[in-house]
Image (cartoon, rainbow, N blue to C red; front, side, top):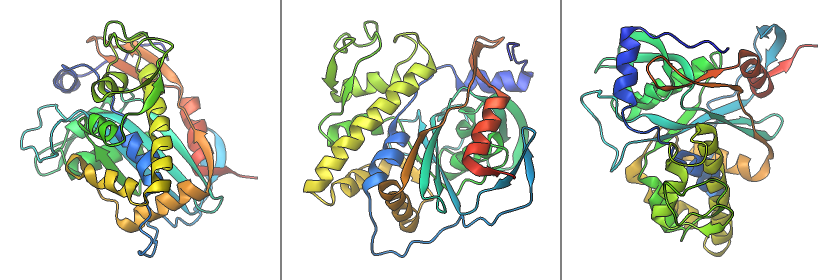
Length: 338
């Protein structure tokens, strides 16, 4: 676990092109996945499921015999470092990394749901694609680079879905939504500012964010709070992911209260982000997600343990602990065999 990963020249090329800018995490995917969709309700549509999985044969996960859970729905929420309105790119120049990865697992049989954040620096198998989407090679690099290998739209999202699915031992992803960097300030502005407690040292990033204080974030502060890393606190992605969760929690409370006064409030927020999102979710999918997160039991966040290292080329790499990964996969997607 403590050894460094070795990269081929092709992998080094991908890392250099994809990580020249600071490693930026955006909470917006989390916002929509855990906040706005929580309150959306397309009640006139009849809910259907793409994921009425039937139990399959006995399998072994990390040496433990398991049977797949039935009636699971799994969704991936992504936040990218693109800015402006989403658009198709014709040259894959390493932009558009996916810096927020949140997996939502809904268990229809148990009436529960769970959240699994995935560290953007996780080293895993990622496909390189040509302009037609053909796979050129598969290499072990940061999972964030999966989105950069694509057209910035559906191809990028689907390549990220593949990388996440492979990391989770082939688990099916039933739908996705991606939002870019500009969504942070926009959604913060639309809700009148999210309130958070400052638990990191922002003195080198934004002096107005003082440790220990509870602050209603301005749009600029929101960007610093969820996006800065290298010059904040201990500089780790783990701390940035914690701030992301704090922002999401604050947003959920605002949406909850405002929706009591104005039924269409959450829908207006979601529609206000249309220019900044890519998704294959339908109204039926959104209705099912919303209903589940309002009515089902929240199992909380699951976490994959691992080790943060600096690789041979000076880039951040998160090496997953295989035992921890196997445990999370068993807990979320399988039942232990009797």
